[in-house]
Image (cartoon, rainbow, N blue to C red; front, side, top):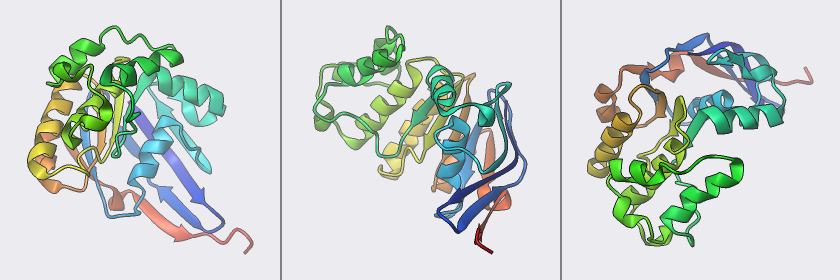
Length: 216
């Protein structure tokens, strides 16, 4: 279970996002919708501990991560959270296999990478250089990289944002299948994908942006 209680985050001296109380059930898949700049990616970054809130508590599977040091947050994320980026974050000159094996530098056991690639339909690309893959194939590798450590939580930041609808739909189908039993929070701009998820959350109903002049 993931909860946010009284969480605010500030960017620079003036812009602040305030989140209402949020709760995400364990094992639930959630599509997160919202206009540009409403705080969707920020929400994922807060939950993963990449950024810290100005105030409030963020609890992930019983751990109040907002109270941890940055080093502790990073360690928690490596152990428990898989993060899928819209722009893939692959090492283009390296093979698919090496892009997954690099996780071993963080102490991740990557022995199941071949099975995960097979489930995503790209096991035959294991030795291919990332730069030679299509957009859909790159996103599947990014999904595999997030899943190889068998996290209990998967955060996906617009995983189909760089794909056309047909390919994006297939990627989401495979993502949902691979994440069965896990908590999946998926930011998307495409409402056509939402019926596939257990829950749809429109973030404008839970977050507000204000100008916060800290010198006032």
